[in-house]
Length: 258
Image (tube, rainbow, N blue to C red; front, side, top):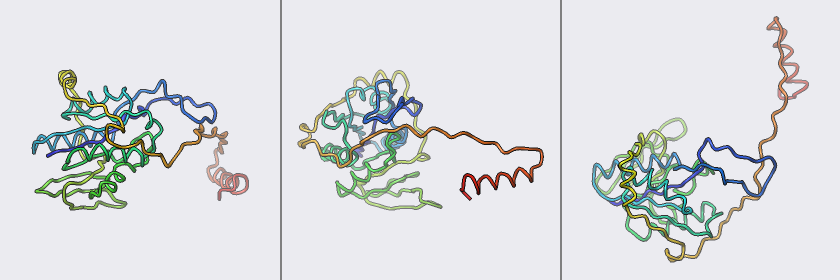
C-alpha cells in the first residue's frame, strides 16, 4: 500500500508572540518550530498500516529549508520511507487553497492508495487543506477520523460528530484527516533519527511540479494584540444574600449584561 502523509511545520504552542501594536506581519525570528501535533496522528497511523500490511510512506510538506529537521526527526525516524519538500519563495504567504493546489500537484506524481492529513494545523486552525485536496483530486474523504479499519479496496472510518460518532464506509483511494484519539504517536529513538538521514528527501519547486505558483485568494492585512483586560471589581461581604443582590444590581444597572 502506498501512503502519502501531508504534514506542516508550525510554531510550538508555547512560543511567545511579541506584538505590542497592530502590525502587517509577525516577527517570527525567535519561533521554535515543530511538527503540527495533529499531523503526528496521521504519521503514526500511516506507520501502523505499513507495519500491518506493508507498503511505502511518503511525507509531503510545503515549507522552507528549515523543515528538513522536522521531517527527519518526526516523520522519517518513526517509519516514513521518504520525504518531499515543496520549497518555493512564491508560497511564503500562500493561503489554504494555494497550498492545496500545490500538494495536489505533488500527489499526482504518484498513485497513492491513501492520503492522510491532520485535522488542522495549530497555527491557523482552519482545517481546510485536507478536504480541499480531496475535492481537487476528486477523491472521497472522511474528516475527524478517530478509528480506521482497512479492507480489500475499502475502508471504514469512525469520525466525531456533534453529540456522537459516525461510521463511514468508502472506497480507496481516499483522503482522511486524523483527530486526536486515533492512536498514540510514537517517539523517535536516537538510532532511528541517525538512520533517517540516509532516507531520500527531495526538494522541489512549483516549476518542478509543472505548475505556476497558485494565486492566494486570502491575504492577512493585520495582526493585532488582544485588548487589555479591564479592571476587576469584587463584590464581597459577610452577608452572602446581600452580596448576591449587589452583584445582580451591578450586572443589571452598571454592566448592563442582564
